[in-house]
Length: 356
Image: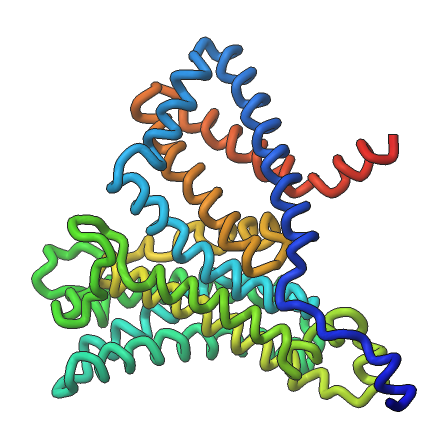
């Protein structure tokens, strides 16, 4: 056996289970602490915390309909979080998920409404590809500016969000408006045959949830591939990456394209699984929430699945808490904000606790 073979490190597992479990425990304790803080706020506002949290639990998990609705909410959050994790681990700060989701929705709806004569499955697959292409092309605008002109991607992706929002508003009020829709800002319905199948009867949970889980699994494989390792090297140090001969502009373009494609798929899923037409609010708020979910999950695919489910349950349960327990909407947002702040600061909090 050669010296190189003796010193070769064993292959690392796809998932660092020890680190993941430690993050999950810390996040769970942080959530409990944030709920305690929220309970104090509820008491100060004259509400019963037990009744409010019972409404939150029932609203998110109480029935099959409620549980599946939580999974429906988690689906686009998971896809966007996975896309964000790819760009963030390359130190490419893509915060344009909302715009990329909008362009994915526009492209997929246009293909659904304007291309005819295809069998159902090829047509649906073409709509899927169109959604991914729309998100990727929109993301690559900022990617090209970053790769070759060193433009700040935070600014460019933010501005592209605004452009996408106004483009969508123009389309659903003009060229793509439903002629029989009484002037509501929406497109025509997609053909019934293109609607995604339901995973549970009489609920809104559809096949896009499976697509999101598959995307999370594929990202695990991506980080073990050659391109994934190159991406991490570029993210760790551009100087080192250039020194070892990596093509940094090409890596940035790859990250921008893949990230945008995943977010475009999220738009496709919202259209073909839930709304069945283009509407103005198709992506409102999802970009920010997706970034939060990615950070809550530590940019780890398994962690992001858990955090997407957690945050979706807070959103869905928070809406029920507002309705059933008469908790003001602002207080619901405060409780959700406490969860986000404490979970994101968990590493610092537990490091300080262990060192004291």
